[in-house]
Image 1 (tube, rainbow, N blue to C red):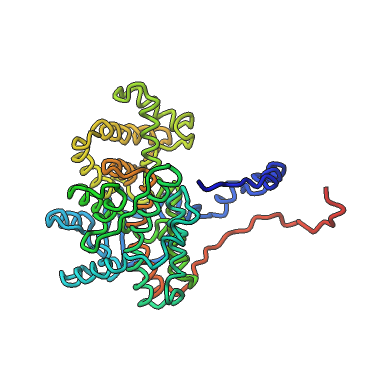
Image 2: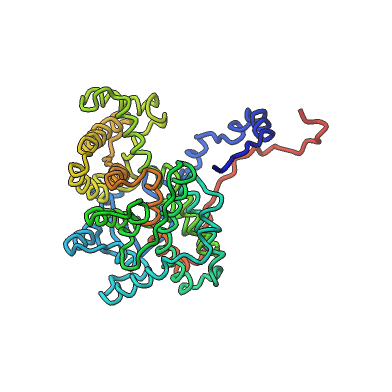
Length: 457
């Protein structure tokens, strides 16, 4: 077991000076209003401040009429193709579609069968990690947090790249293909090492198979017996497809584009996006939903009693239950109003899978949390705008149905989204051309002067 040493001197010092910490960093909220600052790069109505244009993905949750946003069913487009159309064609053809989506996002068009076969073969070849990488990077200094280790693992790939600094589109495309292929392997191996070192379980490492899809390989690599059903693999493939891209305005993609605009290398850029996604307000929200579900099941005497459930949800909203955040995780979205198309699809497949894996009660409870939670949030906040559940409400539940451990939820999100990140990196390199640098208004005291040290109190 890895040991962690506390820096007692630093901790003691921090405790002594902490009384100044919040005072010196707190900005009067009125400063944001009087100076018309777009907090969180959001307009007053909650929409994002327009910071760029993109031809990769589009998120649509409302229509504008006479300057006002009008709610509508949510829609998500990859390169102009609506997500429901992509998914329905994959399901109809009983194909693993995530690789096709990666091609579509990276190269801007749907591939022919020959092009898709060639792309899959290139991905299969790229899955083989560089010699010595696992021993030097993944097995040393193990980390209990898979996202942290994934970020450092991606950074370390720089050392194994013969041309890591070049930002020509061709070189970045090569690196992007390798990242799409290798992230599933890094995540799976990191999980298995974490499981061995920190959970004291047997260590097993399974090599990916060239002929399998990314979804099949991931299930194969994280399971001791390497076994999975065709239905499980196709459901995971659908999850990866739904998470592959979500426009340029989400936090991790914006982080990717912002880092790209500095001219830094691909590994630093994608590592930054991974670190952004780790946050519980972004990619970590699906795990938060499941922690909330477990908390409700543990603290509500009869979750089937609607009155008891509503009472506990009110406690969550007033900060006296769950994690004290006052949030019902999985509700609300910055863009979607009437519905999140990803949530609609995942909920449908979760409903089909739940009885098969003995999780029907969990699905019914989640459905009630969604319905009652929306009602109570809008009531508490006196919200008049239309509000919906988001993709995180059911993605974690689906992963649990697949037997995927909670600590893998956000890493799986990264495995899917790296294709979108890389596409946005290429677009920023080719069409951006400006260092992204928003402005901040300084509100420090205007009469501050240097005081000689002997005169300070």
